[in-house]
Image (cartoon, rainbow, N blue to C red):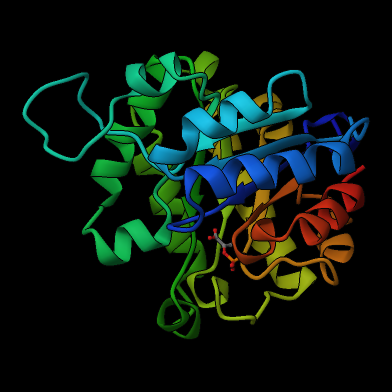
Length: 255
Ligand code: PEP
């Protein structure tokens, strides 16, 4: 299978931005701009409190809604957390797990990311699994070891069948929200290495089929070049997903 046969996914990550009323206004603005652009999946991952507004405003459009995290347990005494069943019932189709901001500020580890990955999959969600090295790790020459470990631990206990609902987002930490983008060659190299890890774990066919995104200061200007690379099947986009015009340019670049 080559790149043309893999599902391209352009996903926004709103982080802690937008209120419900702002969400409705944004979706109403974006929907006509991306209507008919069916060459990629279009996803917006929004804060939990914006999900209802986002799902309602995107009914009948080609935009799907995701969440920014999911708890590993089905229910119980986990104040402040949200379960996969809660998300699924609200109309959420995708969930991000392992974002570097979760790892950095909320003490998430490879092991908790594994639990959250399995919880998303168990509830029928497509999981966008984020991996990526810090600047120190890149400078120390352990980028491959880092993303390989993160990928392997996150996927422990995930069956080949469930892997079909996993998207991997390669997000070098030094490129997230910094305006510094990995070069297309750097991004391509690591996305190719991650595909190799999947081949080792699940075989060549699964590796060829899995969608691997790049994320890290992807914007309207650099998206086309990054998305033209053989192993980059889409993008996870933070800042530029908050502007409907910029996000539309990125969606068009993925057609
Ligand atoms: C992200 O939040 O996953 C991200 C890539 O952010 P930004 O595009 O702003 O760097």
